[in-house]
Length: 237
Ligand SMILES: Nc1ncnc2c1ncn2[C@@H]1O[C@H](COP(=O)(O)OP(=O)(O)OP(=O)(O)O)[C@@H](O)[C@H]1O
Image 1: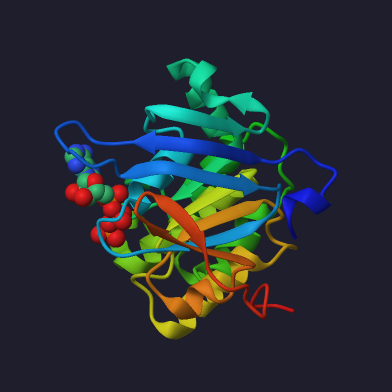
Image 2: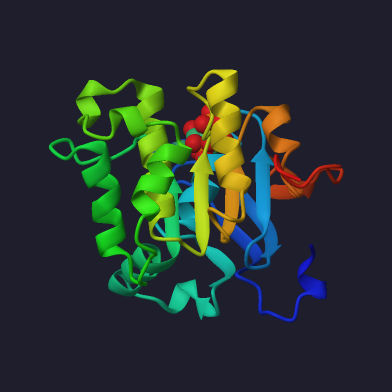
């Protein structure tokens, strides 16, 4: 799917975005462009230190950028204050980053339930159970985060991020800590439009993972470079 074929306005429009950390002579992001339609799925690859996490943080509205245009769901990000960006993030963006930020004194089920309760839209009853099942943790639903392995916590993080049905899910190495079978299960969930219809941007070092995404890019020299179109657009046909 390309934006030009869609009648809907893009979910993300980024033009000529630049960002560098103070004290660094070179920009991390230098003239980056990205156009993304609602519901599209994108994988970003790139060498260590090239700026993938920085880009995810900017997309999550956690990090400001210096110059360029970034429009998210028809709102110009530069024009939003801190509170407005927080509201946009909480209403529209789900994140699965390396740090899981699960609430330590709540069980798996309570962590996902809380995300549902805080969801800005009414989300279907039973979604928490379906998501916990989909990430393969029904048997751990009453455990607290400190009773789970790192990979299990990562899966709770994904269930929680998907609970509110965000417009955009940002995932940093979502299968990084997982064995192959569990990783495939997680990708299945990420790409299954019956479970989640929104857009996905994932960062991954694994070619196999990237190959499952409709659009793939390599981040290099501050810009996104398209990789050859993949044959398959998802795990499930
Ligand atoms: N808070 C910071 N202050 C200064 N420099 C930073 C900061 N965070 C990252 N950098 C630098 O910016 C560059 C991009 O870092 P970033 O974490 O975005 O890369 P990455 O592609 O996600 O790397 P990796 O694949 O190793 O996680 C690196 O050179 C890094 O050292």
